[in-house]
Amino acid sequence: MFYIESISTIISNYSSELTVNSEQYSRLGGFGGDNYYQAIPIRVNTTGTYTFTTSSTIGNTFGYLYQGNFYPTYPQYNIITQDDDSSGNQQFRLTADLRSDITYILVFTTYEPQRTGSFSISASGPDYVFFHTVGSCSVNEVFYQNHCYYLDGNGGQCLPGYSLGSKTILSQIASSFTGLNYKTAVSDNCCVKTLEPLESYQNYGMSNQCNTQGPFTGGPTLNGGGCGGYTKLSARQLTFCGSN
Image 1: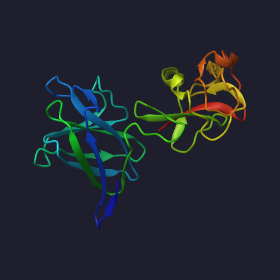
Image 2 (image 1 turned 120 degrees about the horizontal axis):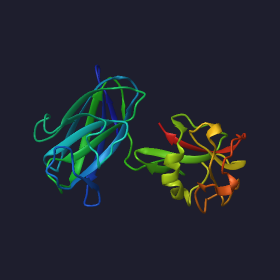
Image 3 (image 1 turned 45 degrees about the horizontal axis):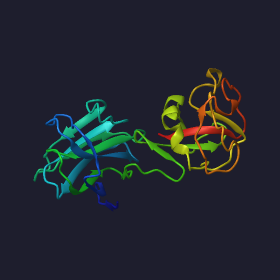
């Protein structure tokens, strides 16, 4: 990915490919078949109007832009705009007003099912567009539903760009922390601080390697480490955070 500055706009570029190993779904307004796709999280530095255009070896491309989460089984949810070939040569062109405090999902797919090949996306607007590599998170993080999550001994505090994650999300991905480690600091309490207020109890905890350096041999479990109904918060409480 690279950037080109001009007098009126800044151009940001992203390149990738669809392969037979790419994820598949039935795209919105499609033929009911399996379309390979890539869901790319994007953010902008400056609120404004941005345009996304494609070029590819695939042929007829199709683009969708979503605010917040993208659900492949419910592609009609959270959609902002979509386009088939407004850029010419069967390439899509999307234009939308984007806010700097919101994560968007740009879905690249094809008009017909089962098409593969390389592609690039060019974004133009008043500032940089940051394309996040699909499924890519920093070290000791778990990727889930277009967000990155980590465990840390930070007493209920998260790094900039992250906020507390919910017990519902933790219950879905807890086992994925096996083999990972604390993000920045070892905890001093085994009970996991999540988004929910203290009075609603912290019911997830680490039974293995409690308050000791990883890698973890398992993830937090319900009532693990004797944490059922725990309501206190220590200076280095084990904390569950996710990207905004």
